[in-house]
Structure formats: structure tokens, C-alpha cells
Image: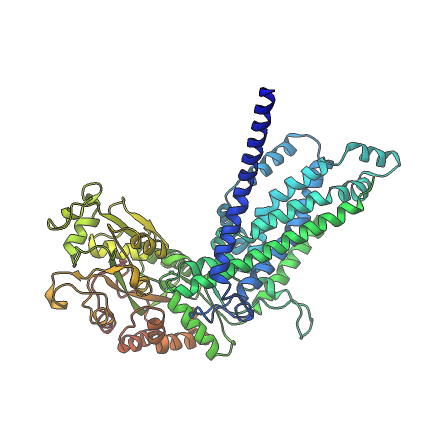
Length: 298
Length: 331
């Protein structure tokens, strides 16, 4: 009887400890958000979102920064997602176990742990200088794409591996080729996992500052990248890819280091916008995963 | 395989040809100290030009800015100190000539905590005693500087060792650029130093005077005596008049922009420099710096128009106690 009571008591205690440990993260996050919100909410508004940076804190805005961030993230996704998923499929479904595939595997795992500034140096040497992309949106996006590529490849492989082998065998048994099997059975089943990994990788990329500073992302930009649709022949232009850009983290970093109090409020408001963008992206990830999960019925 | 290589080259060629049609963009990079002034000028310039000329400004530090300028990547470089021999060499190697134009003065302020009631002023000699490399571990108490001061620890704060501010401070106080004791709290972010000094009653530190202007209630400004009566007697504060007159010595310095000579022939750059020299004084005051005398801006613009390249400082880096209009007139 005594022993039973003690066990029950230990059980209770562990439950409370576990709960409070879990809550620490939530409490810290909420405190941070609340603190930022108190500082920055007065600056949030239409004017803040539609103005360029300025020397006057009350007139400054983040138009070039948030547009730059969206451009960069969109392009990074367009480059990194197909490359990463294709590489993952190859390594998991096609590659034979040779020394070469082993080497590639070890490399990818190592690359995932390389500090982001190293990717910035690579981007500076390869995209900005050797390929002469200059300090453009495309150079930034390509650099970030390489940065997140290992994460996408690893999560793709993880997701493919989680698809039961019996599904593949069943597909082969019905006469499907390897590609047909991958395309219509394995990939749809693995998609939720792949998408989650990709969006998490993109969420990492959105907050990156170091590699973008290294490749020369700018602090003061008072114009937007050229729109892809133009009124002159041939109506579509990729000029925007080669325009200079700034991103939210760089703008925030600059404001935090300025002496005027007003810029701290601007920085806080910028952080709120960055958080909202991240939340929206994660929301899209959850929604996509949910949609794909519904489709898979074995 | 051959086909794919050809198509790759074709895509690349298309990319390159599109780049040629890029709009007029003035590319500026460099020091974070000069950044607020150039940002202000760029903002007003683009308003005045109604957006026809675009200006971008980056922050990669004075040294990083010179690397980009000498690589032909930028039109203009912000610099919080004159160009150094190694950078002169780099530019020469790449065949880049540059025009040096001073844009404002920046005073370096010496700060203590408001609770500190003993520091009335400091002499340059005392500052040297505190900051020179030999002081490391040895000078740790206030009464070691002046015997009448309390027997309490001294906590030192200073600008980051990669900044032009640190380079200039060490040149002016220790006598050798980039040489000081290592046991002090340093940060590239001056707001961290403000917080540190404001919350530590035994603190003593230095950083750009603009950061004092916006935190007056939290800090105590220490007047400096260079014991040279020819430029003003006794301890002097880094106030506007004292910096302009050259009385706040040796801790006030000119800051610059460097223009790539090849870019100087472009009409948009000429308009920008003209605008900078006409409005830079007013705008630098607005963002917390000390404007140069009007004559210096005129001389600066003349220097640009005549395309006088090289540095009035002879390419040796920081120099102490210079009046910029005198230097410019010498030529």
C-alpha cells in the first residue's frame, strides 16, 4: 500500500516536472513576442509597410526589406526544392551503394552542419564574382538555396525511407516501372514529410543574415526589384533577378545598432513582420501536409 | 552533351545582355559610422531626382568597403579613417584610382556612469596610462590613475577592435594604431557599450559622440585635456563648437567618402557628389555628427571636379589633430 502511494506520488511529480519543462519554451517565446509587441506595435501600420528606409525613425519603413525577403524566399524555394527532392530521390531510390554514393552521402550530412557564413563566402566567390551575378537577388537566392539544400535532401530521404517497402513491391507486381512507382506511389506518400522538411529549411533561410551580408546584400535600398511583367515588349523580364536588394533581418540589425530610440521601435515592428511571415509560411506547410495526407489511402 | 553546353552558354549570354540594360544605380558601401550620413544624403537625393537615379548603400566596414572599391565593385566607399598602405597597394594592383572627400567630423566621447562623482576630467596622458598595452592587468583601480580617486576597480568599455573608431582612438591616445590593452569589454554595437556603462557605476569607456547625444540621461560625459594650450585651455567637452574649432583634440576626426575615378565621369555620380557637398553639412548635423566648415565642402567638390586622386594623408591610415580645410588647401 505504502509503495503504491509512493509510486503514484512519483508519477505525479514527474508529470508536473515534464509539463513545466515543456512550458519553459512556450513561456520564453511568449515573453519575447510580448516584449517585441509592446515596443513595436505603435509603428506597425500601412505607412511602415509601404515606406522605404529613412534617417527619420518615424518616416522609415520596410517596403524594400519585406519585398526583398519574399523575393529571396520564393526564388530560394524554386531553386532548392526541385534540386533537393531530385537528389534525394536519386540517392534513396536509384543510387547503388558504391564508394561514390557513400562519399556524396557523407558530404551532404557534413554540409548540413557547416556554418552559414561559409556558404556566404562560397556565394561571393561563385555567384557574385565568377558568374558575375553581382550583388543581386539571384545571387542571394542561389546562395541560400545551397545553404538549405542539404536539409531538403536529408528530409526527402527520411520521408522516402518511411514509405513501407511493401507499397513499392505491390506496385512492381502490377507491372509498374521504377519511375511509375516513385511518381504515383512513393512520392505522394512521402510528400508530407518532404514538404515539412522544406518549409522548415525555408524558415531557417528567412532569418539568415550572415551569408547575405557576405555576398553584399545592402542596407539602404529605396527601390523594388523590377517587376517580372513589363508594359514594353517582350512583356516579361527577368531584370528583377539582377537588381540589388535588402532583406528584413539586415534592416532590423541596422536599426538595432542606431543611437536613436525611434529606430528600436522600427526594429521591433520589423521583427513582428518577420514573425508574421514565418508564421504564414509554417501555416502553409501545415495546410499542404494536411492536403497531401488526405490523398494517400492504401 | 554538346547541346546542353551550348544552351547553357546561350542562357548565360541572355542573362549578361539583360544586365547591360540595368538602370542608373550608384553603388555605395563601407563604414557603419559614415552610413547614417550617406543614407540621409541618398534619401534626399533620390527624392530630388524623383527616383530616376537609384542609390544603394551597404555596410561592410571601412576595410571591407575599400576592398570592394579597389575591386571595382562599388562607385563610392564610406570610410571612417583615411586609406591605409595595404589598401593603397590593393587599389594600385587593380588599377583603381580614387578621389578622397571629407564629409563630416566625428568626435569620440569618453563616458562614465552618472553615479561616478569623482571623475571631473581626464588628461590624454591619463588615458594613455589606462589604455596602453602595458596597462593590461596592472592598471585596475581608479586611484592608480589619480591618487585622490577611490580605491575601487575600473571597468573599461570600448569600440570593437575591427572598427575605424578603435583604430583612431588607439592612434590618438596610445600613439600606435590598433594597439591597446586587451582586457576591456568591446563591442561593434555601440548600444551595447551604452547599456554597459549606464548600468556599471565603475565604468569608463569610449565611442562615437552621436551615441552620447541620444543617451544623455544615462551617461556622464568626461572632458578631455590634451595639455596643449594652443588649441584651447584645460579640459574640453566634445561639443559642436569645440570639434569644429579643432579644440576637442585629439579625439575628433574627419570621416570620408572615396569615389572611384572611373565612376566620377558618369553624370549621375557627378550630380550625387554635387548634392552631397551642398547638403551633407546640414544632413550630417541632423543624424548626430558635426558638419565641416562650409569651405571644406567647397574644397572637397573642387577636388572632385579636378579629379585629384590619392589621399591627403599620404596613405598612412589614421592621423591625429588635423584640420581638414587646411589639409585640402595645401594642394
